[in-house]
Length: 220
Image 1: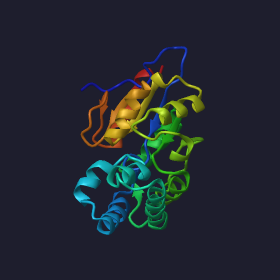
Image 2: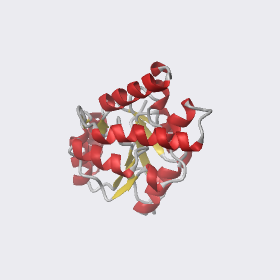
Image 3: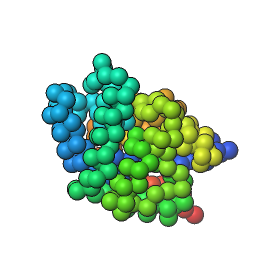
Image 4: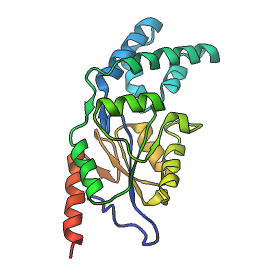
């Protein structure tokens, strides 16, 4: 599939890159797997089934899906317990391959960017710090929206806060709910982990290389 030209957007709008966090900029797989494995052991939910569906979803959505008969109070308590574990556990959290290089390139090329994550604000702050990633001016977390991914609300809000048309933005995602959210928002998609997108990335290094090649081609 041909690489997407992030700068090929209408002249009267700006372009930007909107990143998911977990699995895209931050490798938190070890923490996520540990916390959900423990939760499954406590609730009797099959771990393999849950973990295949949980990635990219807010914790509350996962709890609600796998405890369909629980009351609202029980869902809230289970979600709080799960999040509490993830707040305390940062062991193994690192930036994903190529994340720091890509963000440095974006800053150098003066491309606006934002983060749109299914994590809440507290967890987002903890994980970005653990991965030594300085947050951008615009960060949209689960606390900022009524509906989490796969709903497009988060990506539309990020674009609005950047002052751009979301259709001119490139969403970088590594989960099916995230890709669905970006598509529903009307953005272009750069997909990791074999997911289908307008641009398919093996790692974030691919996007860095593309941006740099475009910068060379467009220089006088």
